[in-house]
Length: 416
Image 1: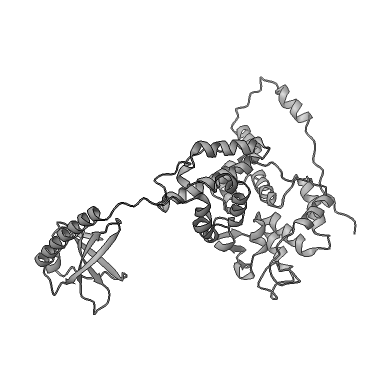
Image 2 (image 1 turned 120 degrees about the vertical axis):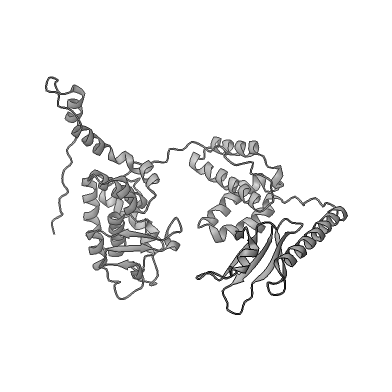
């Protein structure tokens, strides 16, 4: 709303018009709060006086007073003051007559079944996981209690007991975060005055993984992926290795999302973890993989299941076989291919910002997660900035470290 100081002069000079590009605009009277004129873009619309009031629930209601042709500024102001006085009196009478009724306490089980589950189904990809967490632990422990009766101490004890049972810290945190989310929504929906679990202490977790491939391991894996009979899954894995994409992003990719000429791939919001669209660059190897796929011109999906024509749902079993056949770390996950690409890029002196853009990460997250891969780049930079010291001999510790280094053999292609 645009508040006008000298409203009479503003009206007299023809100010009551809707600016180009807008469907409507409100002009407020500075010396009469909540009184305003609404102007619409339609040529037939006449600027109209309105008064904004607060009802007993504290939400806004609007009273139409008349058009500017029917009421002058003085008449509109006088009518607004009269309506305000009557409205205030009515609110006071209603507050005195209507007894205060205590809000019925909602049990946590009722909150989850009646409110949270429908909300999570719309707003969270992991709503099925949330339902499982509630069914396994949260429901049996807190479901029978009113929401207001659940305190911070009880929830913290709950987490400590789960950890004492042998559950991992990361898994326990899933329960605590979900409980905190429950209470946050209770505050948003006016079921609680405050979130008692806000800032609750989570279990300390070191979830950084250092599982990535050496140059030799990468060569062995690529050799297997380019010779194995399961060409579809191997193409998916080769595409992931070269793009750093997430598994489901690649498996649900459509040809309409890919610009081969510009070497760009747009991941739609529905397939992206952040629920926002992102555009990723395609390297030469990724383009070659796409160019050799049988699905080009035959399917809307890049990697369709031959049996159904729809995206693949799981490739884990094939991955386990290929991973074992390649002789790489048995803990290596498909998702770790993202870290592999980051490690290769940083090893070639790419910046963290470049890595973040290629992987579609926020720069701060990429800095925290992948900066440990670029230590050699920092060492090289330190060498460049060093002042030559000929009078000193090479550090013995450095010599010992070099002597203990293992040279990495180049991968050899298998004979045809």
